[in-house]
Image (cartoon, rainbow, N blue to C red):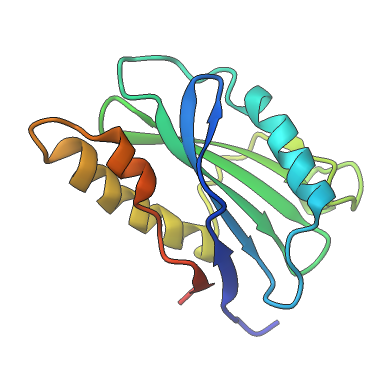
Length: 159
């Protein structure tokens, strides 16, 4: 399959288990993420983040919900730790190659492989690194509100 850009949307932050998370949705331009896939992903998110340790770093990060071109859907939850590092927890649905039990894109399971993200998801990671430095590390007084407002621009993503 030839590479092509996908569409990025930013539906606004959520608060999950006391953790502020920016939201990014990546999907096919002609097929937005289905409501049942979105609901299943966000229903799983508290469990996906259950083992994040509070180390004093502001409880923040971002989540990427990515709908593949086939039956797959991917949920990646990135959290800031140790003031300047990122941890990621991943769930997948509808992708038997990743040990999903079926091809249902709303049937998410925890992914235990050491994945960080694909080329579309990593574009968001690039932005988030810069936003964290700008709003949380450089100023004399970190500003979580400004960090949460600073999202990658919506539109084509991938290149």
